[in-house]
Each structure stands twice: as structure tokens, then as C-alpha cells.
Image (cartoon, rainbow, N blue to C red):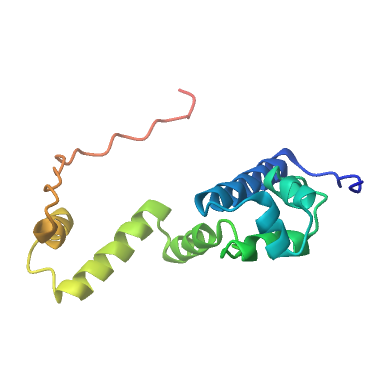
Amino acid sequence: MPEKSPPITEVTAALLIGLGSRVAEKRKALRLSATVTAEAAGMSRVTLHRIEKGEPSVTMGAWSNAIGALGMHLQLQEDDNLKASLRLRAARHGLSMEQEVRNILQTILTAETGASHGLSFAQRINQRFKGLGVEALDVPARQAARPLPSFNKP
């Protein structure tokens, strides 16, 4: 009888169900039976079935064995690490995140082409992808920024 599942959030439950379903899909894509896969992972067919259903009480070792038996691996990844780095970099430069991304792209494209050669950013992007059969991007006309609203009382 499996142990009682620890309390988990709805997000964690959804992630486990998603992982379990990917394990089941991979097993089926390889045309392996649950029994054969469970034996290769050193577990019972019932435990493999619980993994494929995303049950949280299954040990990480069992998850790892099942995933490894299918030629897969589990990799941890920090959420929002890139976004946080971008936010800090933009703050250091006193820019919005959007403008910081534009500056980064412009720096990279300029470095790759050697120089801007008087082309606009959009023209350089179009030039970069011209040989790949990608349609040129339409460059919208620039509009003046709208005036900021005034919140002062008259």
C-alpha cells in the first residue's frame, strides 16, 4: 500500500501529472510494455503506473529509475533566472527590460555584421534572415509618443 501523499500545491500536482504523462508517452513510443519497463527500472508495474499517473508519494529514486530506463533524464531548472538577470541589467542601465533587450540584440547584430553600415535595426534583421527564405519583416512607421497623462488636480 503506498504511503499517504505529502501535501502539495496544485501547480506541483499538475507538473507531476505532466511528467508522468511524458514518461507514459515515451514508453508507448518505444513500444515497451509497462512490465518490461518496470523490470528494467527495478520496480513493480504498479509503481510505474503510479509514476505515469503523477502520484506525489513515489520516491525520487523510483522516478529517476523509470526515466533512466526509458533513456531520458531529469534536469532541474531555475524559473525566471534569465528574466531576473535581465531585470537587474536593465535597472543598472536605467532602461526598461524591453529597451535592454533591444540594446542586447543590437549589440549582437552589430558585432556579427562587423558594423551597422548605416542600416536600421529592422533592416539588419531582414538582411540577416534574407538568405533563409524568410519573408522580410514589415517595419511599422514610427509614431510620436503620446503625452503622459496628468494626475494633478486642476
